[in-house]
Length: 338
Image 1 (cartoon, rainbow, N blue to C red):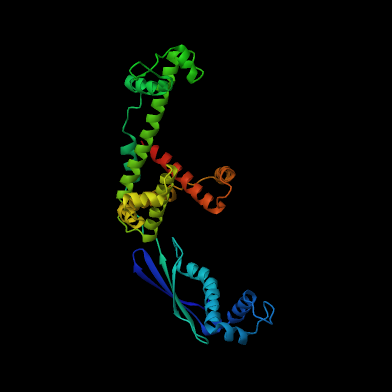
Image 2: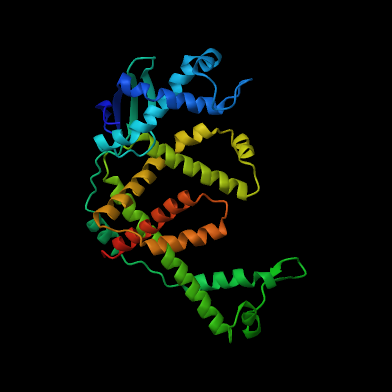
């Protein structure tokens, strides 16, 4: 639909409006298509579906129904041309406003798009090096090993005459109940190794978050509202899931705490913006450093996920996994800067 007239207007740093005009002759070409579509969808006594005369449709449903269907067809046809003509990189579907819709007239409408502002990252390699180069102690202390050991052997505790809990003395026989351990020394070595492994993982996650938070702080651009709203929905959805996992209805939780979802949204908006900036930073780094996920890796992970969650929507699963796998590769890249 190259005859469409368009005018782009920047309404803010994160929003553009495109005014569109479909000429009368082009718009009227949608009429027979709209009539056929409506005729196939409605049922009128004495007429087969798809064979209801135009005059009867207008008499029964009015001209407005036909014009609205023509408008939908025209906008669907024009949308790809509009995106291509103005090189729009939209981050969500646009808001649509009908400006003029009348028979034998040009069709005018406006599309308002949320767009990404220009993102400038701070020196993320320097930030990563500063954070990642800090050494953290990950060895398990004797005190930590003893504490973990006591937690494990509690399941074999007994009660004394006063009703107090008495832990058994750890020996080779008891150690062997926790796995293929030859003796107490082997058991304690495994406990020490597990603690060190957990501390290493926590330390890595801590450094990753510190790095990304510092990088995100350097993003001064105002974010589109749709990105913050999307992050808020994810946060609330996760919180709802966590509450229900504890056996409590989310509505009951809200009633007990005397809070509304809207109040939660207001309280969490700042955190949602920070999280959105972190994801934007991860995306930007992946583009700048040409980091992507091999198709075979994405195919494998998607297949595994869909086998486990058969009702999941494949397209959404693939998009989510691609983001998560790309994020992991970006984190590995940042860790290599130390």
